[in-house]
Length: 147
Image (cartoon, rainbow, N blue to C red; front, side, top):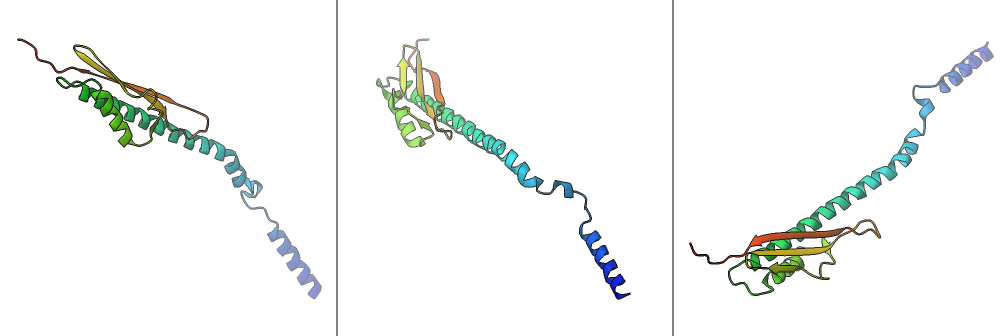
């Protein structure tokens, strides 16, 4: 009788130990899902950082061009005042816009208008990829007019 009881207990223990629970067929699925999804997540992360860097570089270039226009449009401003102000702005703005030194900010003035252009490249988190940036600002030259 003693053998019968222990055999019954062993059979019950083995049966309960190997009983399949809901979701047991997907054991180990999470690491596989993560391995499949992680490259897509990383690509989206780096792409969003790159997009942000391009927008900051464009904003920096536009602000430098507007600063140059504001300096060059003043009444009797000396030639080159706008380009010098844009260069000073870019030197203080940090490295969001790279390669702006060649050819450098340019301002063209005629009798009524000033146009300043800043070109360069944005920082790149993707090696070997370059995003060019070119921003232009316009303004009216201050001058005396007869009424």
